Length: 322
Image (cartoon, rainbow, N blue to C red; front, side, top):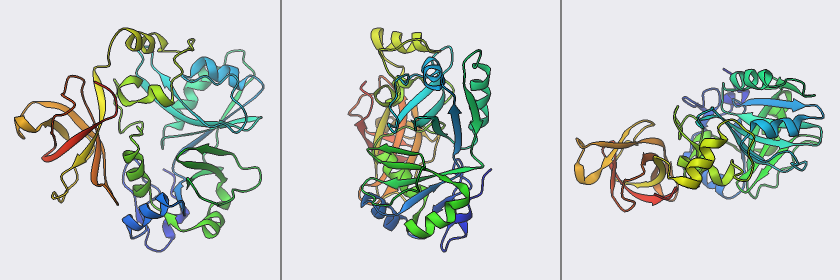
């Protein structure tokens, strides 16, 4: 596990799984959320894995392996992509950008080893080199609207939600001094949940397919084939509906405790002993919306039904259509 030096900053409270190694917050969760929403500060994501791919065949090679169309990816254009199993289940989520000579990827903490092993097994005769760059580079997130300037030559993923910057790890502390205030991952998670954006290992389990969590819109190119699991993606998209769907929940604000990841979801009309119809994937306290959550529920759950997340009532907002 990578331990960030920024945990030594005043007020830093260490985050829990899956974000161990960085700060959950620095003493004022709602202030930090408001700062992010206003485009100030940065979030330390230096616990995330960093992988690089170099070589003249890197984009055409990755195009064959990923769900996204990347063979002609322009330098500086950010994208997301998945690696699926042969049955179409999500195995890896990649957040990448190419700078013209290197494809930079960040992934969930601790998953880079398994990803690299798969990539290495698929090199064959292609002129590519893959590397684990986690020890050399740290990811930081600058919110949308931030005027902070990354260092010369640093790789940057520009997205509607902000910029992910690949900072040389040796310069992380100086970056923090120049671009503070530092903001914890709980603030970023609250804004992620508000935006209905799925996260591998939280919104997914071993049988998740991209359709269930909304990744068809951001991480899958439906007009390309030639990748593992593509048949499942096409079949479900063209002929059927996914067995489960992601929903956003506005939770009852009178409850003190948030339902945690994996907490059962039931129909409120069935009561706390009713049949389970899904589970909570992520939850947070939002500075404006109050307690919120994402949950994965069976497709046939009525979209207007009030749900119980553990014992907390919540009204649904559709993320993936029934």
